[in-house]
Image (cartoon, rainbow, N blue to C red):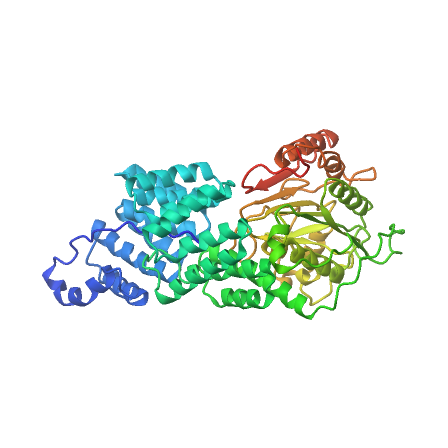
Length: 579
């Protein structure tokens, strides 16, 4: 959820000493440098003062600072950074570094934010507010030990800091200490029961514990509080509290089986104004979840899955989809408990391409990985040689099922491509048509990631794609009118789409490094999938250690031509096969 940022109060300098400036001073000065001034009036007043060219040095830096505060109220973080940077050039201060660091944080640029907070702490004196804000950035990077240390320092400096208790509790939750998290969140609520954010956090913890009704009750109260009174902290991005609350309550209603109320909450999320990275991530999740619920409302009853069929020769077989036999629907009250140990997987292998180079191995790889996952207790949805419609349906069915799981694994083998820094999976019927949008013919990986984004589930995504990929040259040859740029290999997971971030509890593994091409292999399986199938079922092997073994084996098998790569925000040790 959205972590609140606290503003370090800046004592205004004596700006209005010049007698010739007496009349404008009475009108513009207080408007520019008063926290409660509406954002547009604050920006306008500060801009007029800058335009008068009366002040320089520290006094002018102060004007730029307050104009940055105005931009921050509007959620325009690019302008915050521009004005804060000018203020730092004129006269650096703790407050200005803190403000710029907070803007970088809200943009999702956590390393730069940490650098600014470090500069603020070096200038001193040490401030609990700066420790708190740096803790937020460490927490967003998944560095929970450093985040907790910073929150400890913030609480030591200010024992009544409700937000520091709240966010330290969030870190404990991420590390699996739900009782410790609950104790911190309860302390935050005791310190300030009027704050909605701790109630949202406590609702997430109740959902993780399987107490859905308590989760809904806490988040509903948070929504009431947020609607009754706007956040007093001007550093809280516009609309972020309600966006977070409606997202978390929607997930709770969905876990309970109340689809209609979940739909209403997700729709409310999309009506909000998202300016910060966390709010954009929530909206990306809500958009996918709402679409899945709307599909479920109009879908006919699901028929029992047909037995798996062997793949025929390339070009001769229709798309094949196999899945575990459908279990009877669980009662809503039992769904959360069922999720406690439920593990699901989606496995897709596309090789029989019609209009681009066919790949012999992906269906073999998918069968091997699906078999290995079933053997260690996963419920597997398997799709071989899927066209776009079948691929979309298989993925959306899986995302609906994943809401009731503790661990979700997605494995894809086949062609993949990055366009404008976003990754797309390629169905077997891909065909470029003049005048058409290239991306419409493929499956956006960001949609899968947004649909899985949830603080209480572990997600493992494994991509064995971009094998001798013909997609990038064809996209490039389509001409500049398409408005896209194709790169070789897949892109690093910098985002989940429109400004959102890699969710906590997620690991993404690539068969090769970003921007590089993976090999299809000369045998029945690709080098990556062959190694993966050998190690994924090893009992007691932590998933990142397992991927390290896979990496070493692939590097040896390809004589260094292919180096698997991964990006992780996992919240602790994860074992796919029981210890």
